[in-house]
Image 1 (cartoon, rainbow, N blue to C red):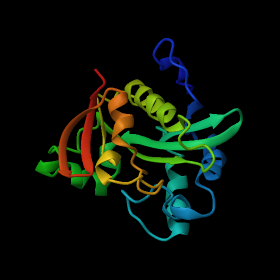
Image 2: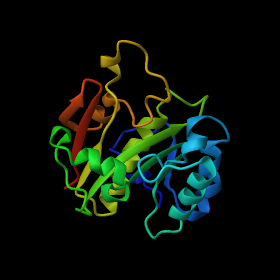
Image 3: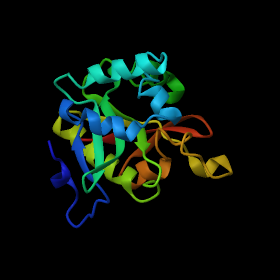
Length: 200
């Protein structure tokens, strides 16, 4: 599903974003690469984190499900970014943190509550609007899939007192979510707010 058409009128995405179907698995592999945190985690930190091989195999199986596990960004034909977006209940470790009162006491059993949880943007394409394009299309994908609420647990980079590294920003920067209409609903620590966007 190409969801570019869901962008606001006049908005200019910095990347083409597509749903991550099974046919796009090789492109997602390219985004994650062979070195660094992404190539070890394979977007499994909030599910059942193991070694890199097990993580990759588990991640690959997710692409066989009826609903894709996220969206992938391209510049031209080159895959450059990834965002996991899907039901909160699929991510048990993250769901447990959202269930804490200080994190907004969100119930993960509601299949209409989704979360935009993990960004990966390839080196050479960062700070160029790819994450914005991913989140915009992640919102559209969640809404088209029937989600009523979209959550995030980004990093408040401004509160860190120094420039955040790419590794620290894997859940996205707070400013990105606020710019796309999310509202902060809780904060368990100075650097980790919880944000929410109503999709209905």
